[in-house]
Length: 127
Length: 127
DNA sequence: ATTATTAACGCAACATTGTTGCATTATAAA
DNA sequence: TTTATAATGCAACAATGTTGCGTTAATAAT
Ligand SMILES: [Mn+2]
Ligand SMILES: [Mn+2]
Ligand SMILES: [Zn+2]
Ligand SMILES: [Zn+2]
Image (cartoon, rainbow over all chains, first blue to last red; front, side):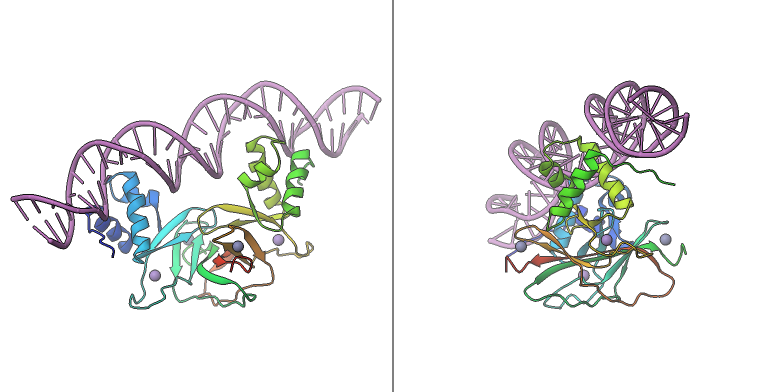
């Protein structure tokens, strides 16, 4: 069994992510947290939160990784993040489009465990 | 007007990418090229090839970036790479599924310039 | 074939991002 | 309160990507 602990680092970082309307990178979280803990701790807390399915990871088109909180029901057995993420080229904000779930026909004999859909362009605010 | 030159670095790197059945990272290309040129040159050649729409960039789920050649008609006006990429968790090969193009309904007022669809799991060889 | 232009390169130095080991701290259970 | 160990801080390291600048070489002009 797991025995994950509620530390101040974890709660503060989670609060920052939850209060943000957009997905945040490790560095952005570090800036927003005003050195509440070490840089390494942020990495480890983020890993933990992802493993616990409290937040999810988004890979941007430039390879940078962002984190956003999970806004869906947590009682689902199979918990997937198959929605689209939009990365604005002007304001650089990454947003979860949670209701946009793409459909596609995969060839046989592929087992999908994880997905990442990212679009980039101009968001409504910058268009 | 552009005046891009055909250097040995560019042709060798392009050959490596074209001869590969799977997408390759910068480091993989460096290894395969047997130090034909500097590490920095590979970065610059890859940028150039992407800008010229000869290869395309794939962002993997772990944030690593891979490159694959463009296998479609080059006379299209608007040249997009909206196919799915599959990243195998066991053999770590990244493959272009060029005929799998997802469909989705975006909310209004989004202008899409670039897309990246990546799945990870087990490929037919590893299943 | 020779010369001129400048894209492309090599090298060094640097920045950013993420990882690992280990001693110390603090959370939660006993 | 005591105890077990998850979590942290720190330092050191590795990987990846970027920038500046003097030099080289591809291409066009002569
Ligand atoms: Mn979720
Ligand atoms: Mn293409
Ligand atoms: Zn925007
Ligand atoms: Zn495989």
